[in-house]
Length: 423
Image (cartoon, rainbow, N blue to C red; front, side, top):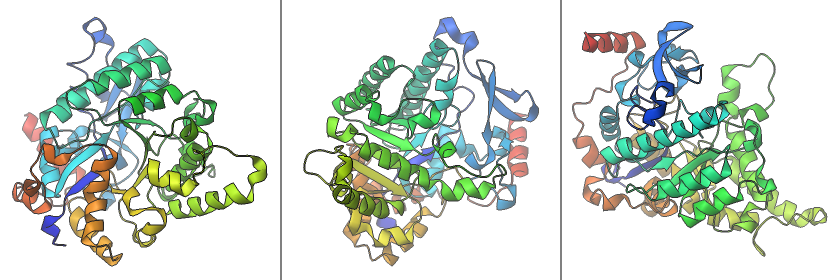
């Protein structure tokens, strides 16, 4: 396949929320209590969102795109030090163009990948208002501004199941067509009931009724991986995929898929390598350990068969796992850019991805499946209803972005440019 003919859909990117995120959508009667982006009270050099008296900054690794690696750290940073494409929707589209990416699905930052931060705050009336306002910003302002460039996804007030169901139906009625809800991948890791309890069944049923996907992004389950008291940054980065393994095992053994057999799960940012191991282990377990009477799947189906019907996983670079794709189904693989996080491959995603797919002897058909067709099918989202196919390719998009600067740029250089623009 010619690199310029590739079509890329990323199902794991992130937005760093701009200062006006909540301005247009928070209820007028609560405006004074809306989240506000201000200078961090403990570190005026960086920005922080203040909501319900709690300050939350953006950790450095969530916005390092185009920085030299010596600038990387977990330390919080301000918008002035970031590449504008992290928080400015118009610059984001330009960055997508120069990377040849047609569309992406953005997980939140300040609210938490699954809205877990907003859900953890004590005033639930205010949190509910913030969640609805955030969804309106994401779907109306972001997705609405560039139809076809972002796959619409929302968050729910999962501390209240009835309100969560209402919000799913509200988002489904929006004109942009919400395709997914991001949820805690291990809810007991954030103080909520587990999937086996049946607590989440009304949410899953609402997703089926509205033809949406449950996106399970790693994050809430990090605390389940016990590490030494003094933990290196490498620990969480290297072991992060274990959270997806735990989450998938929970879902397959919880009975959710027997009770609601049409529910679909996208495992976000967990990679692929764990999947064949887990399915080998679970297929054998269902036979060898029948004494446990585990009866959690649709009648007559193996864990592998359920995976192939109900799950999608995504990867950034993972050459070994691609070699075993037939074991768990090439149709269950999607791709992610992870812009603007430290793992992202911007601005050379097409080059790195094609090299890896060809090294795994993927046919042109398989490349099309992995780069865009599987995502379009799984999320019931047709990218070509917005963008003609000949304008959706890597080559066509890059032709729109020949003036975009992709050079390595330090935090200090970004800050100088930002301050000059504000002067």
